[in-house]
Length: 326
Image (cartoon, rainbow, N blue to C red; front, side, top):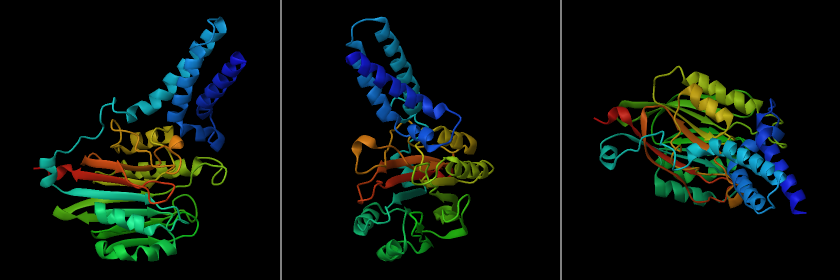
């Protein structure tokens, strides 16, 4: 009985490890890129059960397969542990006091959710310079009127299809474009924002659709949108930030290619996972909400914020502009 169970569990774990390697963008293959941390945990349990099995040739074969899968999965998630060198330099308190900082909150609110006061309380406490809300419709747009006094510059794109987007800024927005880059009714916001000391930052706010049985059958639209932005960003020398719910995990091949092509940095590398989804199920959480930035910044702080009764936790990131350090 134990032998049969170990063969089945090892076969399953090897299969879901290999599926993302297939030359297919179907959600059945690509979705297994998401739970790599959970898969590592399951493999470790399977290894413990295997080594307790009678020492036979079969046991050693199963152990080898499990170890190979464990090493492969661990390679993907290792950069997001404290054991890996930090990709983005930490700003010192003395530097922060004399330089321009940018505080950004990214919040996927879950459109049917009505706990708007929880988001307002977070905005009041953390005082972001930029707030981007995702899945916001006309109800959310009206419900967030109380924060308008803090954010005189706003971009409204309310939709009822779970892809509405609103950008709230303390500082002037220019060169605004609200585009449907790949799919109809799935917008992204692109603009420049003028911060103190004449610091201008290019922002790309994104929320592409995920590969799933209820959304897109394949990952192609999401991947194309990410690579399209990466192609644009790689040609610019100005401070740049890309943020939003990218419906992709930090360690996926697509996100890794996006970072390599764009040259943008991920402040989570060497610091942790900062899992923002799913807020209701601690066992199945992974990082879906992201902020990537150009080499012009140092990190002041990054944290997952308290629940707003959405399926996502908000993500808070504070950056310091390097060029104004002296």
